[in-house]
Length: 479
Image 1 (spheres, rainbow, N blue to C red):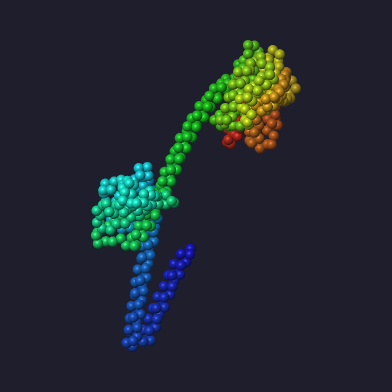
Image 2: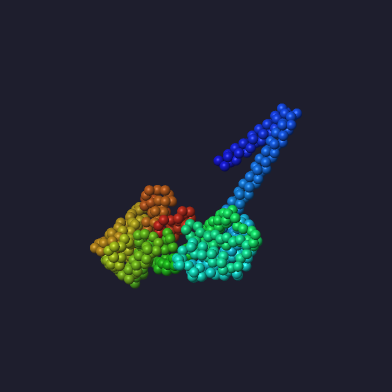
């Protein structure tokens, strides 16, 4: 706006000057029209006015040329000039045109090969130059320092003296942001032409813009290289996670238990590729008995899945239908604590129980897992199965207790991880997801295990928001 105001002010000043000068000429013409002195004065004033007008037009044209030059020069840092093919040729042609040079050569620094490489040229054969080693530039110099800027001056000196050029020569370094890229060598063929201070000023300005373009181009290439590396690493991680997911899913039950008198339906949804929730069913020699395991390792993702694998394997190694739930919990807890070490922050919940359809009981031990809910068909009420001990992997001396509840035909028990509670709180915008689950389960007391789990599955899978924790739910119906 300031430039615009100054420009307008200047134009108004010239207009006022012209008007005043023309008024003065008119006044003298009227007052002294019969006088020779008046005629001479008028001609003098017209001559002065003509000179002023010509000077003004010349100055305006010169200013316009400078503005056009600067505008075109600043376009040299446009990356599209280097990204097009051939990139260097296009930018060198622009420099030659703007600077009025007959030919131009671009020397790029190659620090790996300790040389300057004649990369591209316009108006002259590039084969005339080739690669110029640092040793060639320093062989006649006492100063053996390989500072790029000093080397560039030696390069220009070397080229001036080693090659038989006719006409005017000049050179400029290409550096930006303390990074050195190479040199520009320019010239004119006509022996009578010289490179003026204005030419050198143009060359300096143009070389600065070329250096900025080279700098931006290199930064972009480095970013693209880093982006490609990150993309490759991401793809590798994704493949590894996919393999881990396949392995983890292989450890989980692929089918529901087929046991007369029990109907079980299960839903598992990791928050990421792999998760920390686990569930397992174990048959015994007695067809009327089935062991049930569910647990949740603290955390999410790969670390939780690794600890989950350890906990899962410990129960698989130590557990059986005949195991006492409390003693099994003590044994797994000691082994897990020994495996994790004193400094570990990992722990796991777990619930191990055995359904016995001969005695119509469910005997279990619960190491800090979320309370299962039992729907009693006789009382039409919901009862919770409380915890009987602390989390696994925290204290080696933790103790556990076995509890036994009676079950009846028509009863249903829902087992779940805290991810389901968190999901209900987020979806329904409620503060107590546990209470919501109780009401949810109670309202569906007449539905089958498959129907209840399918409804939970549909709610999770159709929810637009990403889940924040692994979700596991299993409904066991005593038929």
